[in-house]
Length: 59
Image (cartoon, rainbow, N blue to C red; front, top):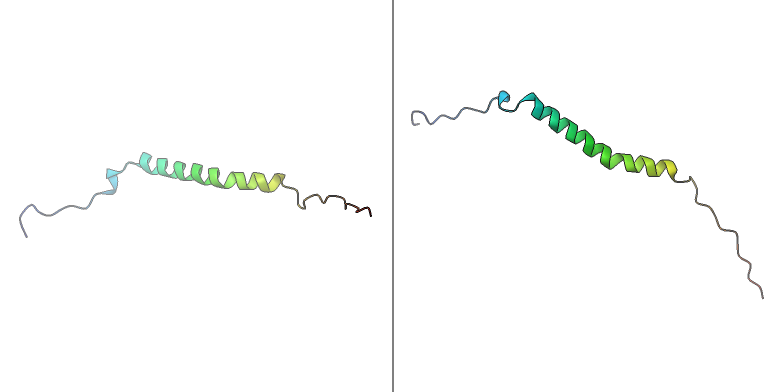
């Protein structure tokens, strides 16, 4: 091994806490963006679709 060829592992302080918070907020926004429309659609969709009245065939 050569002298000075040792690489140090990056420390946790290389990424500040604001980076972690930004990732957390971005993930939360992504989840809300994907899940919220499903809840809204489920809320406003009637439980059973309206059935049309039967049509009578005249002979």
